[in-house]
Image (cartoon, rainbow, N blue to C red; front, top):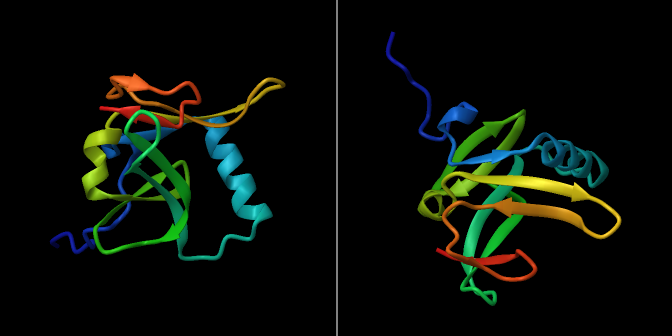
Length: 123
């Protein structure tokens, strides 16, 4: 029988341009539960113009859009505009919870330049 999956069907983590560390996945699940993120919303990962290095990362909860690729990473639905894959290929999202720093970070092998805060990059 032919595969009738929609183009936005979930993909294994090996086929995704990004990865989510176990610490980041744990924190994302905590936020989903604490903030009561409704069904039908997923984690949006992307980039946008701006920031001191030229591009900024986008991370938040959103509904699926027409040009999205949909991935399932460790049980978390991730939406990413197809056009952003080029900038995010190989990126790992981490979460740090220390005394001197707390929050999500992006380890992006495509970044040729980053700002001091790590929130923007040039590719």
